[in-house]
Amino acid sequence: MIKRYSRKELTDIWSEENKYKIWLDVEVAAAEAMEKLGHIPRGVASIVKKKARINVSRIHKIESEVKHDVIAFLTSLTEKAGIKARYLHQGMTSSDVVDTSFNIQLVQSGKIILKDIDQILKVLKRQAKKYKFTPCMGRSHGIHAEPITFGLKLASFYEEFKRNRNRLKVAIDDVSTCAISGAVGTFANVNPKVEKHVAKKLNLKVEPISTQVIPRDRHAFYFSVLGIIAGSIERVAVEIRHLQRTEVYELQEYFSKNQKGSSAMPHKKNPILSENLTGLARMVRSAVVPALENIALWHERDISHSSVERNIGPDANITIDFALARLTNIIDNMIIYPKKMLENLNLTKGLIFSQEVMLELTKTGLSREKSYKMVQSYAKKCFVENLNLIDVISSDRFIMSKISPKKLKSIFNYSKHFKNVNFIFKRVFK
Figure 1 (cartoon, rainbow, N blue to C red):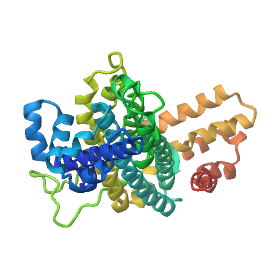
Figure 2 (figure 1 turned 30 degrees about the horizontal axis):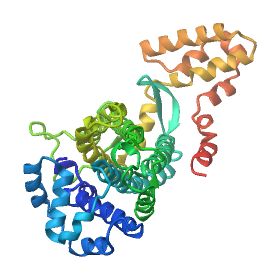
Figure 3 (figure 1 turned 30 degrees about the vertical axis):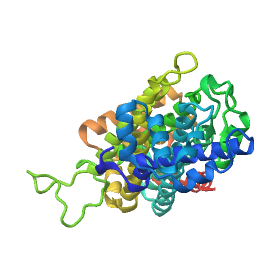
């Protein structure tokens, strides 16, 4: 992953140093259990734990010769810890170490991403309550529909990220498994009690049945959740980008004093951070299909999944962490223009109240079809001729015989659209 879109806490998790450290933790925990069972001499685990040192460059040098990363790792441990280290890995296979460790890295990453989501929820909640009754235009198909509040927009995002948090918690739990079952998963040369000990020591659950590898549906679920979170990030980013368009300009990303928007046009203030999030969301989602395709391996195992996970493991987790942090910053510092929101509400000169006029006519006994056709014809006229809908409706004697002037005036009022805002907020922020 490139540094530009990385944060240290996540890059540390996916560093070679941390990976090998976890491998060592797995091997030491397994050795402890084997000692208790009398399968290897006493003191192996403590000696290895005391003397072993992770030397990434040395491991890579050995791997360049033996062409096997786990063998290279074990050889490097023996060089530092001495002859007793030869008892490590008894009856185990590479996947026991690699798969268990990969799951630990996913769990470590997932817990940080949960914290990232907590920060987004905190900022969204504060901003939603601040703009709870700030009127703005609700749009469907990009076209003015009916009034809402800006707070409701933000509350909708808040509820979505609450769901994302719940999904991620489940995915972390699902991938928190350990497999120390040996070749093809039969425990032929390693006691199941070793697996149980390692799982307990490393805060994992025992994989009920592994086929030498931990089943990849677990990982597919985890990366699919990251993909959904990426979709939610983009949903907010796209909304910000649309609302910052010159013709709309209801909000703006924070623009610092010395920031430049364009190398050619000094007037430009572009929503570059939100655009960046749209791109990063695409990258995270691109990890989902390979993760799904990793589920189907040959027989009890192959390594077609390995190269995929070496890429998507760090890339998807590091990117989603960076994107969540960036989105939190955007929402926290965005500049809101309530006057422009109100101006846009009035842009179509009352057309947004057409449904209420139609509904009021149906209450007087007119069919919905006739009411719809009548109001639609006037709406079209207003749009083409730039007229106020209330003025055109008021000039129709038939309609005014059905709707009193007082009632008509009350229809062309925003307050009705906001009467249930408190109700919605109570459901979301209960």
